[in-house]
Image (cartoon, rainbow, N blue to C red; front, top):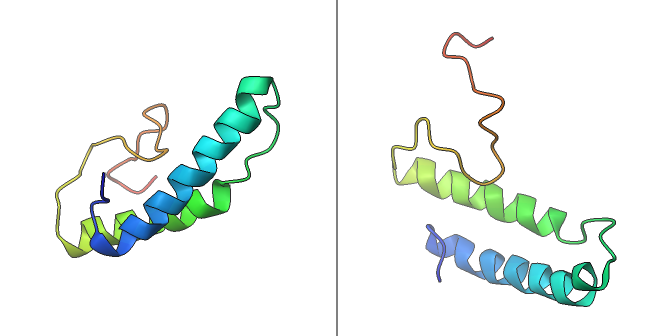
Length: 78
């Protein structure tokens, strides 16, 4: 599946490959310390957020890509 932004698709594939490799080679064998793919994920996330903004996709109040509903954003900035 491609990313929301064409410019993000290669980053998505790179992250997916890293995650899948970590999941099979480490996590499923009980080695769950560390996150070797975090930097790739953060770059991909930044790209997706920019693509969403550039395309003016309305995403207000939608939880995605690591944002937690436990910490709702206040409309007054606090």
